[in-house]
Image (tube, rainbow, N blue to C red):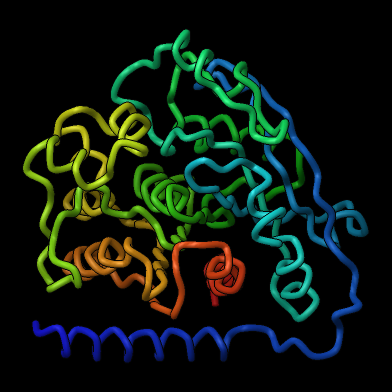
Length: 342
């Protein structure tokens, strides 16, 4: 496929998806003065990590006023070097939820957990606890060495089992796969898609904003229709650089086998090959000026080849909060449609 043809295809796809969202997004008219949701803090023990962790939980306006009602739950994951407060402090997700809910978005809980720099997967090797503690730098008091330096880095089980169980036990959720979704940005975009494909019995849908959704991708830029992956660990290290390599190699492994096993495209392939009936719905978006965009294009191509139909969009923007603040509303509306069966 030529570069011109690919660009034209992407622009058409983005227009179609954006048009769908505009049509489906509740019209913001009247009631920007309606009731607001509240943000609660949950601290709980994670057996999978061997430490206490924390999550912020946005409770919709009706949660307090309708005490007999149960609500769907949606999990929003932060990116690398982030924390559980990113989505509210930098992303203003609570304000976006207030606006959309006032305009008619179906109500659901939104859970924003602390994921460290764990890549939301079971690490390929155990961490050096002593080295982690000595190099740990506090993040505005939001984490400590005790909670960040975990002895058992099973970050996938932590989210899909420990956190989901803690949320369902503490809050009035609908504890069913059909009423549960997950989303995230960058590292969290990887986590959202990978966790949904790894635990399709837990999550109905997954959305990725600017996600690292193909960590081993080393194909053409722009994407030329062929998904190519690194053939050596040296190629992977050169791609990601010295700053990201320590956490990525710990999580994904120091050889290509560990990386390929954690590729979302491979996970989807295994589900299709096994004849899975309930493969999660997938939403992907990325900014056109984002260096990660070809990973979203590649994963979209791979999922389509498998007979799946991911929702997909590209909008102007970079890999930053200016982009995510604007476009989080698209994933929220899309998730609302998935959970309500629209």
